[in-house]
Length: 302
Ligand SMILES: CCCCCCCCCC/C=C\CC(=O)SCCNC(=O)CCNC(=O)[C@H](O)C(C)(C)COP(=O)(O)OP(=O)(O)OC[C@H]1O[C@@H](n2cnc3c(N)ncnc32)[C@H](O)[C@@H]1OP(=O)(O)O
View (cartoon, protein in one colour):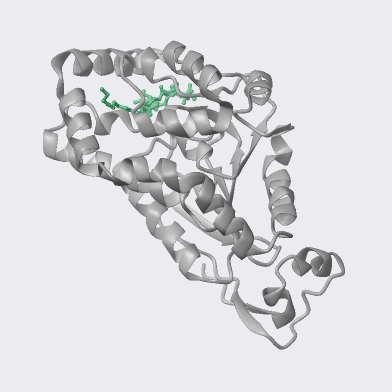
């Protein structure tokens, strides 16, 4: 159902974005003259986008059951919806979260990188690159509300955000566990992790394929805050409200200064990276490892 109500935001708040926090605390969200803010819910089959009650904020929820694996479709929908939010200048911040109970995202969809042909691997990898580039360089403030397990590609996705709030449930874990599957995290996964937790901790985590339970993830700096499960989204929204107090132009330029060199590393050799991926993933030994890993996952229930 489309919600088409329109809220008017005072122009002064748009010119002085940091004033919004204070103003909203004073309950200024009365319709007054100014710029129109759409409160329309949009999205697609696997990605739902809903404006939050705070002006300028949206919640993007992934709903690709059972485990929010990053299928080609999910990746494509994610990028399209992010672009929509970026083009709608009324949005300044987005919370990324999951609709799958106990799982933020299981990472790359193993069925996309196992038993397919080279053309498919190339198309898929391009979509993975695109997801990372768009999220990592987004001008929007992104906060990950990690409400469940967050391995591999799921962890990468959360690492592109500006802040991570995780559910304090020892059943959940987060990390780049690629080596456990017999595969290798590419250099831009590695760079994203190094930029978050530093070189030494990344080297250890990557070689051992560590999946950190929440307390350890907080200690190592992989997530920024732990909260009870039912407060993950509300905390992410309140973190965004604090970030909204910073003038956009200054924050965006700073984010770009911090991240562009890392993104350039991939932008300069996207095609080469795709070729490396295709030849690596097509190897018989790698395909065997992936098949065994998938079979183990499937057997778990039996
Ligand atoms: C020289 C260098 C060159 C560079 C080369 C690059 C190489 C490649 C780099 C690849 C980079 C990233 C890799 C990834 O992201 S791979 C994915 C890694 N993900 C995982 O290891 C997580 C696996 N899943 C789990 O651990 C668990 O499923 C869970 C997420 C903890 C949830 O547990 P659960 O008990 O709630 O659910 P479960 O019964 O396990 O699963 C339900 C069904 O979902 C299927 N499934 C799970 N994960 C995936 C997945 N990632 N892709 C596809 N399908 C998945 C699982 O098989 C079950 O299916 P079914 O119901 O039995 O049919």
